[in-house]
Figure 1: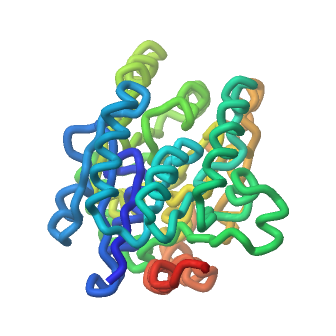
Figure 2: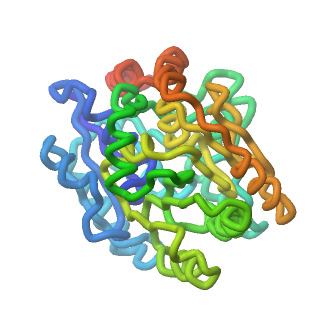
Figure 3: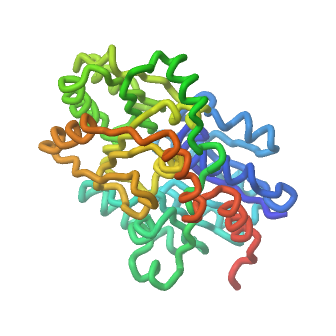
Length: 372
């Protein structure tokens, strides 16, 4: 059995947590065992209990920024005693910390994973990231990314062209996310969404997702149409300020904050259009989910076009003067027929984003022997 230690921010509703949960659920646990290092963002993330029930150990550490000495000490204890074959970090350039420790304790395979592309940062942040990557490269044995753009962003164009980067696809359970008309009707009734144009965003309540732009856009939408509602699914460290922003803009009655949920697949059935005006992304899992569901998506042009494996995704700029364009696109929405929505999950399967085949590829990756 290969013992794999995964490092990520939390095991809540975020894309990486969900992805790892779905991958591990499909793997043969007599061949692969996952443990997790996460950080103290939440008391209990929604994937912690089900992963523990599958036999995973979950170690919750203090945030490195707030207490680097204690964080490092606990990380060394876990890795030093864990007899791991693989340490796999999903923390971006901050993964250099655990890569160094994994090398110190002779972990054979040390994997660093890029989930972000097109991030806009200050010169100071870019310099810090460059320095950390220079350190990390001395310890990493395996380079990974969620897609080509994310691979180039972290590892460079040459490494990507030379096939040095393993692409771990952000796959989904296509059977779970395929459109279900019966669930649509039930949920629209339960959530009082009948006769509404239902817009939705699924994402952390953070600056990355660009909620100020989203709310300005939505304010324009409700000036043009009075039959709309915006659902916000997720939570995050900036939740209070984002909720206050919606209230201060007079949107408290038409924006519904649903929190983190474990039935996102069901809720997507009830929606008509997905919105993602992110400042930057890697290859967001949620956009594979929405396409599987046959749900139209209007997305920031900062998001990689690599994920547009169907005709459902439209990319628009997010400059200040683009708000009107977003609002016009939303207001001119024409719903797909229910039969059309049911067909899209097959296109996702054909593009290689089905969790069953993708998890087998990842299982094979972990079972590989380290390079000599």
